[in-house]
Image 1 (spheres, rainbow, N blue to C red):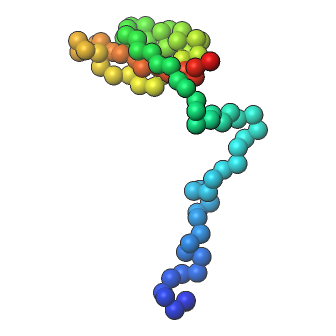
Image 2 (cartoon, rainbow, N blue to C red):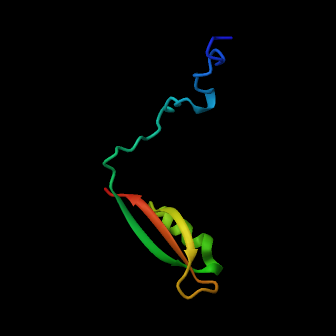
Image 3 (spheres, helix red, strand yellow):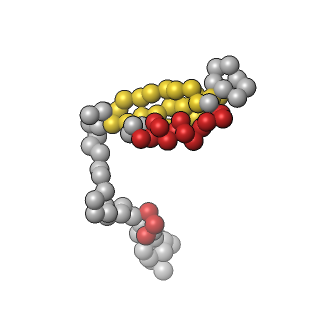
Amino acid sequence: MPPDGCRQGAGRVPAGLRPQARRPGSRVRSMSQKWEYLTAPLLIHNTKAILDNWGEEGWELVQIVPGPTGGESLVAYFKRPKP
């Protein structure tokens, strides 16, 4: 054991925490990526169709929160890269 009581190799980064190489074809967004945002009411009885429609337009769902009126009212937040 080293004189300071540390195990040899204790400063190594575990394999699961090392930076991974990019997969071929993966997109890396620059730090200057600009986003546009959208909020939309989400009807509880037609959720999948509404989300699919926004997804077809390139919108990514970020979060769903209770609506301002409570009850079954929901609001969906979306984002997509600006052109």
